[in-house]
Structure formats: structure tokens, C-alpha cells
Amino acid sequence: MKYFERRIRLLFIIPIFFLLKRIKIGQTVFWYSVCSGAAVAGIYALVNKLWLFPGMRVSGSYHSIAFGDLAIVMAFMSLTSLGFFLKKNNTYIVIPIVAFLLGVIACLLSGSKGAWIAFPAFAVIIFFYLGNRTRIWVRLLLCLTACILIFSAYHIPATGIADRIQAMKKEWSDYQADNRSKGSIACRIEGWKAAWKIFKQHPAMGAGVGSFQPIVKKMIENGEISKIIARFSQPHSSYLYSMAECGIPGLFAILCVFIVPLWLMISSAGKSGFQRDILYGGIILIVGFMHFGLTESIFRRNININFYVIMLALVLSNLSVQKKINETDNKW
Image (tube, rainbow, N blue to C red; front, side, top):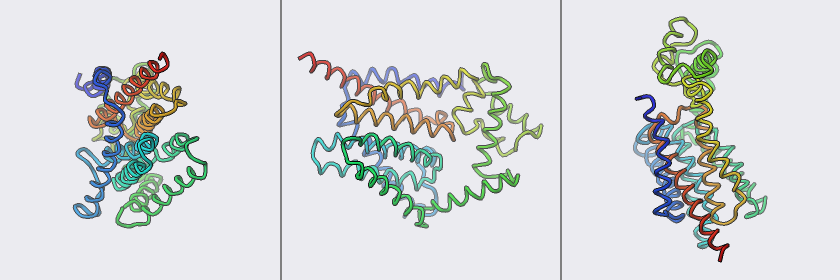
């Protein structure tokens, strides 16, 4: 059961959802919490990078990857609070904008390449979110500003972003030249190859939960894959990990964790007002975790499980409460 312990935690979304629905935590608390999280992450990253540990990747309590993933999700979720803050006062728009910029800075300084790949998808979602709220030239200007920010960060040596990208290119060249003794790229590709082989051998139900590492060790002994992944108990991909250990049912299960709530939100994304804001915030949350799962076994870290479960429960409970309010207003 020790292998199921973390995965079972995903089911806690059920009692948390009903608890939040009961106590009715409103959108004011939700949006200020999201913006505060992104802002604090950015300030923490700047302090670490510029004063405490210059030259090193910024990380939180767990790992720089988890820190970067959560920072970028909160950054883009902050942008979906624009409608909420604009209805208060135009000056309040500073809160989500500053939170967004600091969250992006936190992600960039974490050096988490797996988080960076979610940028284009997030940009498309925000483009549609702004929709008829802004003219198309304003949306294009926002995209241009974000690109300038990233471009500038790349050319500032202190950020270490250029070094990370150059190191990635070198790792890829080494891997192509059959030098697979080190590097995160070699770790991931060899892990993905191993997981895919295991899945092809056991497609129906997988090789069994907790079986990845023992099987990989046998593969290494047989010379099928590089020994670089001997110390890993997972292949750095949530999808391939589920497929290798639980087969097709495992893949179906993890897809449902994302697609079921995503479908609920996309089907209601045409709503107006505060409900539309939180719908798009929920879409950012889910799409982000779907991307992170491509290059990391995200639900092996407690911080990722807790964040996803609690934030998704907050989104769904707010939507549920708002729906009841709308129904009551329509009756009157």
C-alpha cells in the first residue's frame, strides 16, 4: 500500500470540496491568496538569487522544479483575476499585474525547463480569457510585453537562464553522440524509453505498482538502457509512469484526473462576470499540471498533490456557490 499512499491523497478533493462548499470561502479570499502566492514566490526568488545564494537555482522547501511549477501556475492564475479586481476599482489592476510579473520571475529563476514549456498554452488561454474585455491590439501588446520580459531575462547573466538553455543544448548533443552518462535530458529520455518498453510488455494492467525500478535494474544489467536512471524509481513522466505500472487503466485514470474537471470548466467558459474569471483560473491550473506531467512525475510530491487538490476544490466550490446564487437570482 505504500506505493498507493500518495495517489490516494487525490481522493481528498471530495471531502475538501464539500467542506469549502459548506463554509463558502468567497472569491475575495481566493484571488488575494493566488496573487499573494505569486508575489511572495517572486520576492523570495529575487532575494535568494541576488543576495542569499547568487548563481544557484531558486528552490522552495522541496525542489526547484516544484517551486517553478507552482510559481508559474499562480502567476497566470493571477491574470484571470483581472475582471474581479477591475470591478472594485481600476487602480486594483496593479495587484494581478504585479503578481503575474513576480510569479514569472520566480519561475524563470527556478530554472525549471519543464515549467517553461507551459508558457505558450497559458498565453493562448489568457488571449481567449481577455476576449471581448479588451481590443485585440491590447492582447497582442500583452503578449509582446511577456516576450520582451523573457528575452530580457535570457540576456541578463545573473538570471542563469542562458546557462540553463546552453547546458540543455550540450546535453542533447552529448546524448546524440551516445554520451549518456549525465544530464537531465539523458535521464528523461532513457526513463521514457524504459517506461515505454515496460508498457509494451504489459499493456493490459501494467507491470504492477512499484515495479518500475526493479525492472529498470534488470534492463541495465542486460544493456538495454543507460545506467544513468538506476537510482530513479520513476521515469520523469506522469503519463508513462502510470502506463508502465498500471497499463491502459493507469493512463485512463490520470487523464480523468485532468480531463473531467477541465471539460466541466471548458463547457462553462462562456459565462460572464466573476464566474468566468474563476473558470479560466481553473483551466490554467489544470492545463499547467497536464504540461508538468509530461516531463515530471508530479503526483509523487506531496506539495504538488496538496496544491492541485486544494486549489481545484476551491475553484469547483466557488463555481458551485456562484451557480446557486445565479439560480436564486433568476427565480426572483
